[in-house]
Length: 194
DNA sequence: TGCAAACCATAAC
DNA sequence: GTTATGGTTTGCA
Image 1: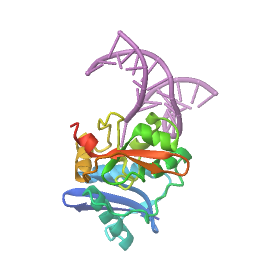
Image 2 (image 1 turned 120 degrees about the horizontal axis):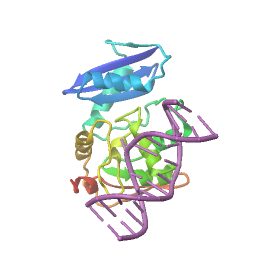
Image 3 (image 1 turned 90 degrees about the horizontal axis):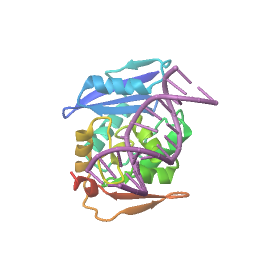
């Protein structure tokens, strides 16, 4: 059965929906209710679930991963098993692409679109429905003019996340994909404009 | 700057 | 099928 686990760490609420060793959704916010709502929104109506107070080791580890990312740490997440397969094919492609944006860099909606296919607005739609924040770093996707763009948790939160990810890079980077390239830019390009 | 038109996958009807 | 809806982008005054 699907398990929901919420935990407050350093004044921030983190939550994960999981079954066995697979993650179905994650969320974080300053409010417990907001996290719960966000998780539930991602689950199909017909799946049974329960909120737990005695999380598995796996759940605890996932939460601490969320906290690391929230704090701007460069923690590896490649080993985490995300339940992407139920999502539409294009959505999966976009999410996997965004997963490649490294800490310290941002991509634009348009550059993600060029790498994953489709258009910039379609990418924005996928970001808005990202079930795995901040695991899939949708906060690292911004406008082509380095304006902030939107964020589910609010513009202020997006800014804070990006500030903690500053690494002092100065040059754009072209990440090679199978059939295209994903161009990313130092996060400073965005912060400088604020 | 500001505005209009083009863009494109999804979900809802 | 069709329409409405965006976390956009680009061009042009």
